[in-house]
Amino acid sequence: MSSGYSSLEEDGKPRSGQNYLSKEEIKEKVHKYNLAVTDKLKMTLNSNGIYTGFIKVQMELCRPPQTSPNSGKLSPSSNGCMNTLHISSTNTVGEVIEALLKKFLVTESPAKFALYKRCHREDQVYACKLSDREHPLYLRLVAGPRTDTLSFVLREHEIGEWEAFSLPELQNFLRILDKEEDEQLQNLRGRYAAYRHKLEEALREVWKPD
Image (cartoon, rainbow, N blue to C red):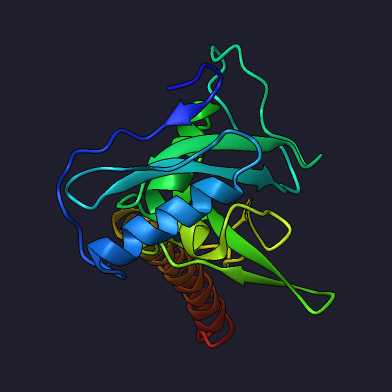
């Protein structure tokens, strides 16, 4: 692999959703793709029908993500920097996001980020969020190498405040809230009991027979 590129290693195991095309169709499309390539980033077809190649991902982040303090690397910023990844046709969107975060030693959860495909049609630009199980290299192969036809963008995931947390984390938050609620109720009951006791004492003093 060429220096300066990040790579996702292929384990050779088939995964669900990757067989969009027959081997002959893949062979033909890879051949046409490589003929149209102008930046030397060609695809390679293996004998098992799995192919490898490059995708470029533009970083469009509203804020610099949290990185390891000892990373020694610059965080991807919102200035639209482009990153090139060498991946396999079996690599999913989720794996591509993880690879990008790993490249920059980002410590935030991959659940906070999403990969979008940007398409250009009839002078209009459309952005569509990809599911974690889609295969970016397949989309690149079908669209061809031109980034003005199809490009990939990494953005913060448009999710609610709590959706980035795991189920065990959310359950732990609920336990903490339940505990705090019980403590507040006990304190409130104690204050009212003390207030009632003082009122009863005052009433007894008022109605005490002379």
